[in-house]
Length: 335
Image 1: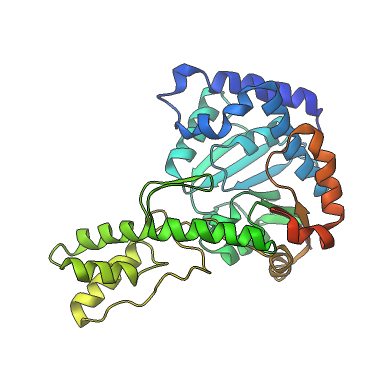
Image 2: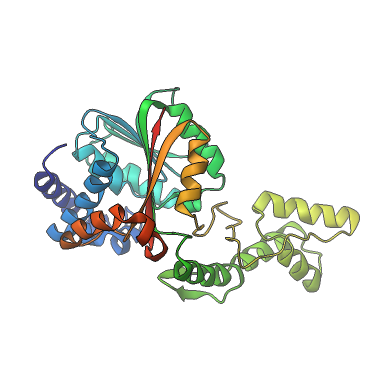
C-alpha cells in the first residue's frame, strides 16, 4: 500500500482545490458540511487513515486493483482508494445531487480514467462477472432497498479471493444504539421536521406520501388522504400511486402501517433511513452467497489519529465489545 502520509498530503491538496469558494455554485452544498474537514491536513490524514485501516483489516492492498464503491456519495472514499493505488474505482449512488458532484469533481481533476460515478442502485451495477477485486460499502448498506440483491451482485462481480468490505455505524447489537436509531425512525416517518440526532429532516415521509396521494387523486377528501398516507408506510412513490388507484377502484384502504421497530422508507428516493444490523447475523447472511465472512466491533467514524490503535484493540475484543460498539465492520472473502 502506498505511503499514508504522502497519500494524505495529496488528498489535502486535492480538497484544497475542490473546496475552493468558486466551486460553491458547482458542487452540492452538503460537500462542505460533510467533508469540509478533508480540506485540512489533519482531516485529510484522518480520512486516509480510516480507509487504510479498513484495507488492512481486510488484508487488501488497493495497488493496481479494480474496486466498486457501492453507495459512493461524493466519492471521497473512491478518491482515497485511487490515491492508495487503485487502478480503477467504479462508484454508484442513487443520490443525484451527490453523484453529480462526484462526476464533476472527477472531470475537474481529470481523473475520469481512474474514477467513474454512475447514478444507479447497487443491485444494477453493469460490470462483468468476476471482474472486480473488491466491493466497498462504507456507511451505505443501512440505506440499501434490497440487501440480498446487493449481496448477489457482489458475489457475481468479485473474483475468487476478492473482498467485500462493509463498514457501518448502525450496530443493532448495541441496545443504546437501537433506541437512538428508533427515535430517528419515528421522526423521519411522522415528523416534526427539524434536527434529530445529527440528521436534518425537511419533510416527514408520511407527508411525502400525502403529497403523492394528493397529486395522484386531487378529488380525495383530506381524511381519506390521511388514512391512505398512514397505510402506505414502506411503499415507494409507484406503490403509493398503485394503492391510491386500488382504493379508487375498490374502496379498500391500504394497511401497511409504520412500525417503530422497523426502519422507514423514503417514498421519493426509495432508500431506507438508517437500517440496523446485527453484525454476526449480517456475516451469516453474506456467507449464504459464497463468502467466508467475519464481523468486528468498531468505535465508528473517521476517528482522530491517536484513537486508531484503540479501535484495533476494540476489534480484537469483538465478542466483549460488540454490545457496546456504535459501529461494525464485516470482511468477506469470495470463495
